Image (cartoon, rainbow, N blue to C red; front, side):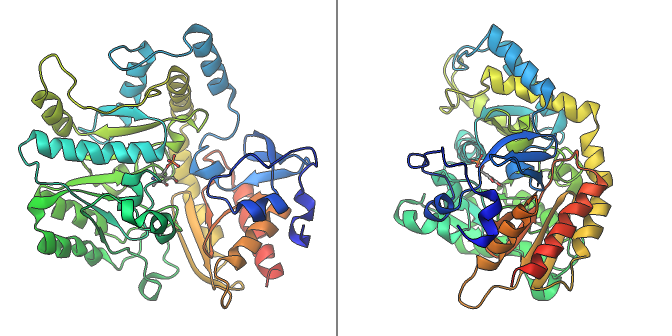
Length: 448
Ligand SMILES: Cc1ncc(COP(=O)(O)O)c(C=O)c1O
């Protein structure tokens, strides 16, 4: 165990051999583990009874704060009445209710909701909807899917194929789905370093889609999928006008536009969706994470009525129209958690709260400009990142050490490469925002 982790060591009783941890440096972690045993509101508590301020809402998902009684109670009651019911050729009432509540939060027209259990499943569902739509309309030659470099769309074969993260793709390169291409990412520090909110340079980067249309012919392209704000690769905020331009090009060529809002939906940017914030309506939106405060696995895909109707109307009058679904689609416990969560968001006006805290968040995160190793700071809503200079020959190690130092000081951050990302629960207060960035500042001074 090194000096940075000695205060957060694991109680010796836990045998860690069997759990193969996801997206984790297993050997490194198990040599110096960080184990959380409980949570409430803005805080986790470790097995060593250290209180940790959650600056990440877990993994961008616990937007209403931890262990909300209303959600626990709703799940309990639902489980006491109906623990499980299939939604293949059967259903249960709150599946419909949850779809209605979610549909009401989506942009106009995107009111047909398909449920799944993770962001990855939502993404793969959205890609299948796009292919099925074109086929139903007699344009079955539109099979090409376009993602974006530095995009993260989960870990299904569809998601890693359209995704733009090398490490997630290279071991599976021979098995990625065929006919996928990528537009370039929007990250350019020469032009946009230290932008507050949306950078004012870079709308033209959307024209890269025209390059792919010229290469492949638009009539072969089914859909383009992008995160409106790329989260996992370090909070890449779209340049002003970029998403509008992407929308225009898609519309011009009959290509469906999918926004992967697994991170951005449900208040992260101060509105129900990023689509609403940017005033750009895609054809399909994927969502997960905050849909039910991450209490039970759940995700969804909002599909425009036009796309939905094309698929459903093309199907037989008494046969399945879309051969896709999950055993746990609209699981009663997940749907109950979803309804309780959305009621909390509504009652506590948490999306508005997120919007009203965003200027404070922006001020505090940008105050770190000039601190050791800081080469960029970016933010939108309650989402932000601090990018650090990498150590020579050891990329990623500096942010990792800063992450550990922050944890030792009682703040949970998230690191990806040499970028530290922040996405606190929307119930955060101004003092806690100050605490997060004051802690980061100290950590930057202590870690070399
Ligand atoms: C934009 C985006 N899409 C998809 C996913 C995958 O979600 P999951 O981990 O629930 O499969 C994530 C996860 O972080 C994400 O950020």
